[in-house]
Image (cartoon, rainbow, N blue to C red; front, top):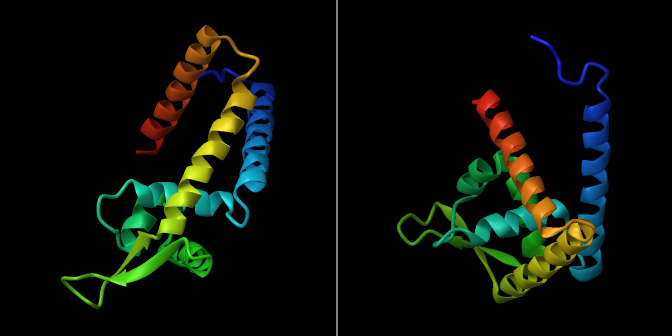
Length: 149
């Protein structure tokens, strides 16, 4: 099988560009939502996808991280009043994580920060180029997911 990037130049360019995109996103996040890290942002967005408060193990599985990582993230978010631990009504030994009202407001701020970062990143592209980029990124992610399964 031949390698489509024998010198690794395309891979290096991809890594460099994804780091730059990440820095732009992080800058927007820090400017608009003080005290929330990118990892905490991801946890909050994931938490909002649940209809009922999930267990930490559910969050860890969805985020594809070890449960201890979720505990650390939740500790920080709870200290900021963004989430709270609540006992499961059916089994009080089980702890669930729910957003507070401050957490919902933080999510709105995160959405705005992510949107402004995307606008900055995509500003040079036409609508057609954006569509092509979206398709290419989907292909990359779907291909990577297929290889890891």
